[in-house]
Length: 230
Ligand SMILES: [Fe+2]
Ligand SMILES: [Fe+2]
Image (tube, rainbow, N blue to C red; front, side, top):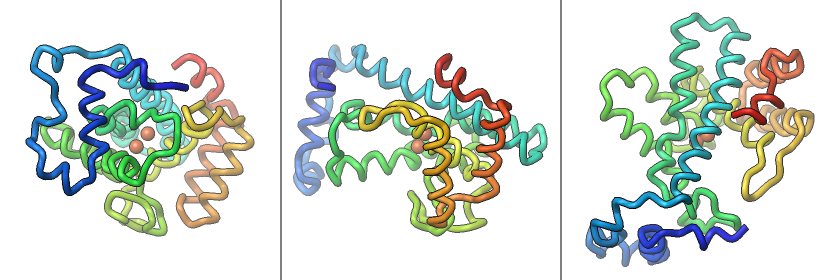
């Protein structure tokens, strides 16, 4: 898939800045990635498609995550927080260039580092909005791993909030059963085996992965219709 035709002048400018070595970028003016104001106001169809993709992923994830939360007996308040946190978990990605987020080829080390920063950006965005403090741990920590090898803070074990762990498991499942630019959609059995591998590697909670597999297998979360309809 060739992403270039969708790029706006702003995205081209951002990409050009992003392609510079970090030392050179730091010496550039803060608005170097921005074209003149009239062009800044434009939102391209590619940007809209990018935000829409992030939103649909979040809505699917909210279905899976709240079903897991219900399965393990979370109270109503936590379920509500889990649902809203799931919807917001990748809000930081909206600040990243779509051509990086949805790049067809392999990310460079620098692009990958930028993508890995999205939980921090999301947390900073949520910190600006009164009433979102209870959701910030899910936004910031959904890519942590139980063995401490995740990001952005390298939290391990119980230091990773439970709701963030649930979002993390549901996030991986959605990434597996839904097509991405770099991979096809996997069927549920393949997704289950890859999730179980993450348990074996010490990255995910066996209880949460078992809960997700149980709700999908029982039909409690109808992943096929969720994937098709959201
Ligand atoms: Fe994420
Ligand atoms: Fe996500």
